[in-house]
Every structure is written in C-alpha cells, then in structure tokens.
Length: 542
Image (tube, rainbow, N blue to C red; front, top):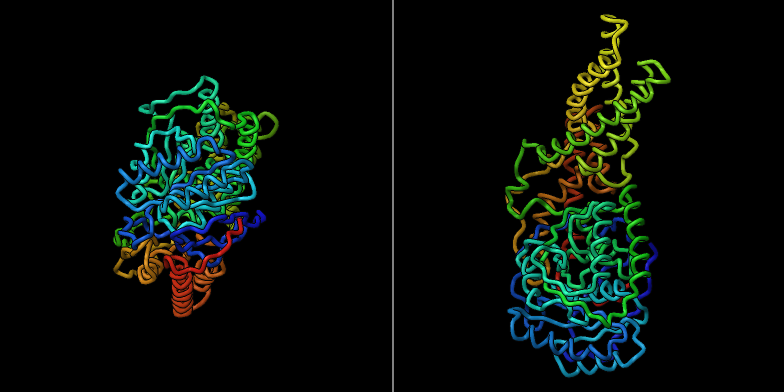
C-alpha cells in the first residue's frame, strides 16, 4: 500500500511539549527488517517520568464546534477527579471548516493536559493513526466527541492494558450486561454488521464499531502500518488483524446513549465497510498479511521458553488437525462418490485424494501449524504430495485387497474400506506433517536461563532485557522459519541441508553462526526501536 504524506500540523504550540515517536513508513503488507520477529512479552506498566502521561485519549472531530468544548471539559474533569495515572487529551481535527480548530487551540492553551492536532484530510482512521503514531503514552485510547459511552467504563477499559494482561480493549454495546439507548435502525445495522464479520472473517469480538477503544503503544507501533483503511473501517481492520495474530482483546460492557444529531452517513459507511470486509478476507485467504510480526511469546515466565524436549502446542495442533482431517475425509468421500459415477474405483480414489490432499495441506499449514504467507508454500505442497502418495498407496492397496477378496463388492463396502484406510492414513499424515513438513524447530534455541526483565518507562523492555528475550525467543522463532528473511532460510534450510549431506561439525558451525548473527542483529534493532523517549521526532508518513 503506498504511504501517504502526513497532513498533521499543530496550529498552536503546546505549553508542555512532549517527545513524540513515530512509526517508520513502509508498505503495510511487508516485513520491515528493523523490526524483531515477534512482540516482547507483555509487562505491567511502571511509573512514568514526571510530565509523561500513561494514557492518551484521542477525540477525532470534524465540524464539532457545538459539542467540542463541552466534551473536552467534561472528560478532563472526570479524568482529573478519578483517573489514578497521568493523562493527556488529544483533539484530532479532521480538516474542519467551522470554528473547531479555534476552539481546540483555545482549549490547548487553557488546559495543560489538552493537545490539539490539525489534519488537512478527512478520515477517522487517518486521524487516529497520525495521533497514535506520534504519541509517547504507553496506552492509547479514543472516544467519540459526543461522549455517548458512559465514562465510568474508561478505567475498566485501560486497566488490562496497564497491567499487561491484554493488548487491545474495546467497549461493547452488544454484551449481555450493556445498557443501550438507540433507534431500531441503528441497532439492526450494528448487529447485522457484526454478524457479517463473524460469518465472513470469523471474528469473535462482539462490537467492531463502538467508538470506545484502547491499545498498547508497543502493539500500535507494529499494527498501525498494517492497517490500510483511513475511514470508519479502520477499527474493524485493526481488530481483525489483531485477533488473527493471536493478540488478546479485552471487551468491556458499556452503557451507551445514541446521539440523534450524529452526522455519520449510514449507507455510504456500510458500503465502505463491506468493501473493507472483502479486501481483508481476500488478503487473509492468500496469506498476504505478515501477522507473525504481531505474535507474542506464551508468557513472561522464563520457563515458557526453556522447556526442552517437549513439543510445543501438541494438544492444539492435534485438535486442529482432527477437525481439518474430519472435514477433509467428508470432502474426500464426496469427491470419490461423485467421481465413481464416471470412472473406475482406482482413478476416482486418486482424483479425490489428490484434490483433498492439496486442500488439507493448505488448511493445516495455516490453521494447525500457524505458517502464514507465501514463504516455502510450494515446498510444503510438494512435501504434502509425498504424504499424499503414501496415503494413496495405503488406500489403493486396500481397494486392491478388497477386489482380490471380492471382485463384486458393493459400493458401500468400498466406502467402508476406504474410510478405515483413510483414517489410518490421517494418523500417518499428522505424524509426517509434524515431524517433516512443518517441524517445530523452536526447541533448538539455546537456553539462556533468564526471561525478559521489566522495562522502565512506557517502553516494553530495556535494551538488555530485549537482548535476553531475543536470544531466548526471537532467535528460536527465526530459526523455526517464522520470518521470511534470509537468516531464517539459512537457519532452517542450510542447517537442515548440511545435516543431511555433510559432516555434523559443519552443521553445528552453520547453526551456531546463524543463530548468533540473528541474535546480535535482531537485538540491536530491537534495542534501538524499544528504547523510549530518545528518538528524534519524525513526520508521520501515513
């Protein structure tokens, strides 16, 4: 996706300027080499330096001269009275043509915790991305200017992010304990839209469009460059990508009262959202999104990365494989029965098994073993075809044995024999997939004996802690092939080839050298990226 020039300007000098960090500009669907492979483990946010807020609440506005001052003063009074951490309120003006810029500038001068941003282009998503990318607060939130959501939900919204429990948090108007006052048309549209998300994108969150959300800054720095939409679909796209990457989304039931004077165009917004659903669904289907950049370790306990000799995720992989295997078996039997009407049993078996095997390999690659993107996809399919050949030999042998025993066997008998043979082939397929096609090489990383330490300030870790984490976790992930870079290919491919064809000493040298290079290089990049409050301010390229 081409990047957009920043349109953010500050019309008034802030009385208490704070250092701002921006995310680098690069294509949304690419893996930037300066970023480590995975996010560090979540940590409880520690006390912030004087003048640095823990929470930055953004209010995107467009021609809101009637409600802006009342909203900002009410929110500021509430936060000053109840919020136990430092905070900031940022007004993000989306190219307003009324007196909204003048009002936000006056509020900035009168209230030290208020900051005004001016954008010369419209778009709620553009405003949130610009402000969040420039903020130095470790927790970033936003709410609608009409304050439709009860402010008592604000602390429950951000508390899981401060504690390190969750990565994102959303208010939900559709939870059972929520209390909502709005018209039947908006209620119908909202519920229909969320049903579409559940049916098409397998979304599990309940309310995508509630204007009451929060995100940790370390997550936002990775996630925002991957979000393509600049309008109302921004929220949905961000949540879908986060959920598919395995990030934790916390939902808070809210009390919400509809604003009858809302200027949102429902029909055009709904059409834009449906186009966004189609775009994201297609990108997820072809593996065009580098979601591995958003993965986190299992936890922050060092033991989570020191278990040796124990296969990781066996139970989850087995359940996923069984579900996919059951569906593949039904698909295979349906194809066989259909093909059997026009061809002999051996050829019908081969065709049905080939088609179902390709589909089975693709599904297991993505869903069971978590391999995303196009990297080594052809190689995996080729190995899957070898596994298919073994299954073909097993099932064809069963048919041949049945024919030898009873040449006039009924069709139902053929299906029963094939079902038993296919179940045996399924067990063998799982073992081959796990040990050969998609091996888990994470256990080969050196055991460092320590986990990541707590990081001061809003950043997730210090440079030293990141070095420890990288040596223990990121290097292992890189060796396993979760990144598409040359280092991963060297660790996963060259080492394996060397082990197969050359002496064991050369293999050890290659693996050790590659792992050391990856650890040192990734550590340096990660340390540079995660060191808080020392980066030079940059213009946001979004």
